Length: 222
Image 1: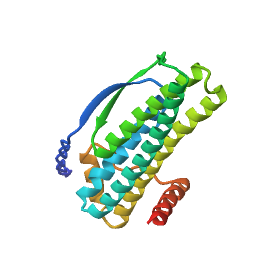
Image 2: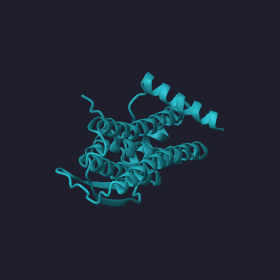
Image 3: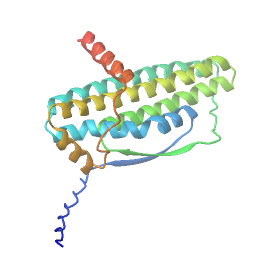
């Protein structure tokens, strides 16, 4: 009876050592906590994939274009948050309010900054938290109504979550395009070496429409 020769085992691929900053800070508002819980981790993976993985397979121009668009979207959202925060801070000053509330269940947020865009989004979360604190102050001091406060909290929370979803969808499209152009194995190995899932989730029809709308908006701005 013949014996089958043992198959040689492939050597495990070495994980890439990449630079990160690790920053720890308190997050007070429930809205900022929800953005971290629901969107941050998946967004971090997508931003890292956009910034590193597609560069590894030599698509510099595409990555630069995506990174520029991502940064632009984050900056625009930050400007809107800052404008609203400044408006509410003036309302607070006009009403002679100097108090700041404490929160019953703040969370410690450990952010791992593996790309410049991740750093941008982390600052966006911190800005959202600061805005919510001013808004909650005005609500507790009866300057703004309960209904208005509830609606505004949800609006700003969803604003950040929609932005995160757009960026995740952009990464899925870039990944899919790389496969269609014959770079599938290179992408898979690059993702594996970088500690990412070999495959992102498949695009849904809704996500396709989101990225199409983003492309249309970009074309209209040019």
